[in-house]
Image (tube, rainbow, N blue to C red; front, side, top):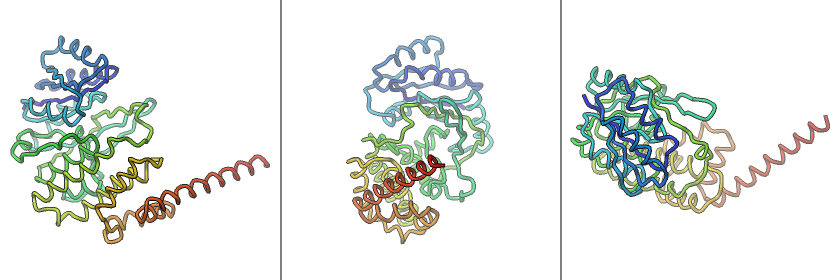
Length: 338
């Protein structure tokens, strides 16, 4: 069993050596390492060329900058392994990762093996599980759409023959929620999925990416959901999964972008407009109703006001924040008197 490790790299000269070293030093050695340099303008390519001199398994592909999904597609086309493992160039994997995943593959002849990881911050590490084990059913697509499975492509070892046989095409030029789109397409085809409960993937949280902020890339989330919808329709599954699909749109577009990210930008408004075009009736969807029921009163009001009208929701947010600031000021003055 040969594994192709595909690394997407763009302007990460400070991190790429750590990533590649974690791969070349794996306890399992039958691997090829395909690094797609996605038009880097810093010293990334120079460092890759040095690393290549010391390990013949490294193949460097240079291309114009088109984003991570196009880099992954390029690497996948050139891969020759039985399984593919995707890694982002500023992350890294534990040295026994591929050996452990191979062991699970051989035990069950799985199409996909999912594994856990760690959020790595400057001063602490937090483990995360790919599966929400308390909420899982025996339906992977349903669980993914209901947000019980982390969609990240790097947390999964995938059989290349499964991709080829099911003609799984990666979406074109999507730079946000692309992993959700790809994994949804995989799960539509009922793969045999194994699970490794070890925390092996190190997801580096760079200080310049920790602050929640709106990005123009986020507008691609609508294209990601259009891609998923098209795949559901192609496989005559949209009617069966319409409630779960609506829940995914509600969580990823409405809650995590419109509500969760501070600000009142044009990008947020555009995403809100696209969300409203989906015409989701939140109180007729049992998953969304259950989600709203579990929220505190402030969040419930935010959901209801924004869902009715963006301007109304934004007005409520302004008043809510002003009221919160007034309360904080009164508490401060009270403590000063004491």
